[in-house]
Length: 256
Image (cartoon, rainbow, N blue to C red; front, side, top):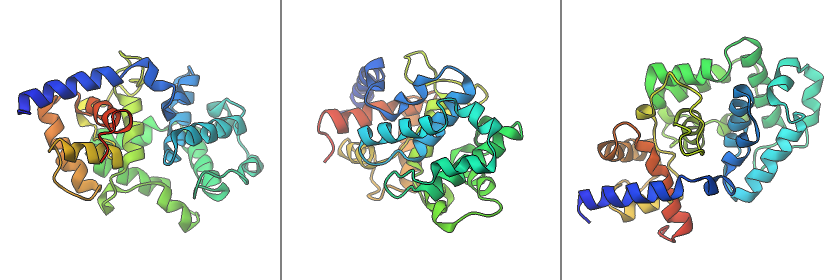
């Protein structure tokens, strides 16, 4: 395909897969169960934190996590006492265990009790510094004080080479327009033009098969390389192509 034909193809596929039907089998289903901004932010962040493995399992475990927060995540964080962390002791999703869950819950509680929330911490860092440095600065803020070293691996750091797939996916959810009913468009101060592609095995393999990505490793350098190409196709909303690349990989067996 020529560049023009490739862009037209990806535009077509992005439109095909950014659809309400997409929600039903994707982890974004969890924050779609809520209406209030803060509930969507919190449920989305915790869901994204465990979003690796089979999507059905991610959804089931994220739903369990919401139930542990009485299906009122913001109210739970705002009224939480130390003893309330005990209810998360037995939570497990793959290598994300009760210790990790308690850490994230306690840190989120502090962010919201301080009045900043996720938009005022992660969102502000990305607005000021871009996705790579912004995510890294947020991680540095999150991991202050006492924590177990094992929990560090559950928050990516692009400045250490990670593709940061899950947190970039979360940023897509919060920032891109909700015109199609999939993403939420809650964080108005950040342009979708600033977003980076949530690069995983599926999107990486499809991008390589389409000659969009040369780098073999799915790391931050690969994210930057693919971002550069996708921004030429649509400088205002490059991450809409996440739907195209992921959809081609998962639904059309382009993942090879």
